[in-house]
Length: 106
Length: 120
Image (cartoon, rainbow over all chains, first blue to last red; front, top):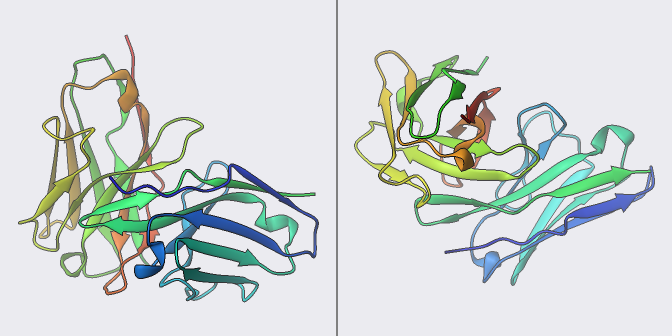
């Protein structure tokens, strides 16, 4: 079965750029989505189709996907961006999620 | 505004059954594929199952295949998950999620989730 691998944690200082990677075999050959989940809340879509932002998602969120790695980038990270982030791709009919990355802003 | 509201969670003994519901509103339910995704306490998101727009094609994760059954009632804009032979490892918050009209495919709206605890 298809697997996506994320680093368990990433730390960033306020105002700096945070990058969260997601690795999977030939991941660049399909679209990847990213979800933000804050404690006690449901996931929220922040990036789809590798680099598109849904309405309402701040411009500081961006994405890329090439080769075996997709990357979520948060520019000018704010305290409110502290959350768990999950990448997601597809394995035929099934959705596959990465294990999640806890982003700490300190 | 899009709403997905899950219900039916609770405490159940191992080997027992539970039926979850997800009531949708604010959009044309029958246009969208829908999914169940679960999250064990302190753990990540795990896909459980999905139904195509008219419910004629259902897919399940291997971990629940043969025990869980997903259905949808487009007339009622409601999604169901019948869970049988429950195990401790099924303990999780269960979310229903709407798949965007694609391609590309993504989960563009999520419910608040309903907690299922399997314990004696």
